[in-house]
Image (cartoon, rainbow, N blue to C red; front, side, top):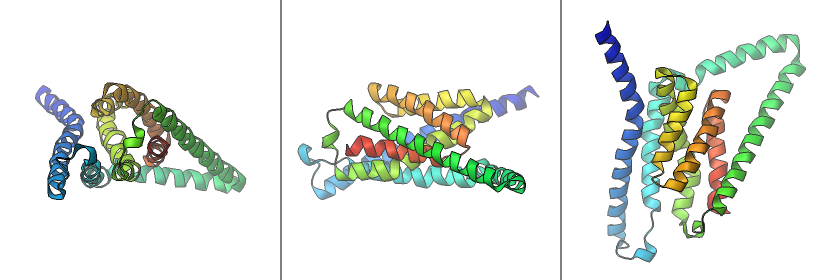
Amino acid sequence: MQKEQRKLQFKSLLLIILPPAISLFLEIVAFFAGITISMINGTLSEESSYDNGPVFVIKFLLFIIVFGWWYYVMIPEGTGKESIVKENKNTVAVGAGSGNSTDGAAIKNLIVSALLVLSSALIGFINSRLYSDTADFSATTIISMIVLAPFAEEVLFRGLTMHYIEKAFNPVAAIIISSVFYGIYQFNLLQGIFAVLLGIILGCVRNKKDGLLIPILMHTAMNILFYLF
């Protein structure tokens, strides 16, 4: 019995560590792929014109392929089917009593979601003021951070990592530990501290909204204000 329990604990720990570990491996693959592209283009020796954008594009595409498949195919809970069924049942029950109540709840959810996205945009704008080199980002980097990064990072940290930590511990631990992983992932002290706080906010929203759509939209809004303003 104890042996089976230890195996279960080891499996839980492995599943918690595995997504961030794989992300580090994909970072290395993307880095060398970017170096290869730069060598082919002949820009590697020109520091002023070297563009990290291709590395980010390759990295986030790899994240989306690997972690997106893992989250939406391998984890039944990750599809959100359970919450959709539950929501539909609640809608039918409420709708049978009053159509206005259903409409009111939908409007309220829409307003709350919009406010969350707008507040995230404000956070992104404030964060951009903390950095003096935002104008140095290349077009490729900006596009990858706005279009690819939000989905890739949310699936990895608020999707897979939070899911496995929550199964092993509890929702609060899942939010905190996944946020710490997200901070370490930045490889920068100041950005790491900011990312931990941001991860806690996004983790709370993910739990409250029971899905990744709103965190992805919030992340996108933050990156738009950070990289474009």
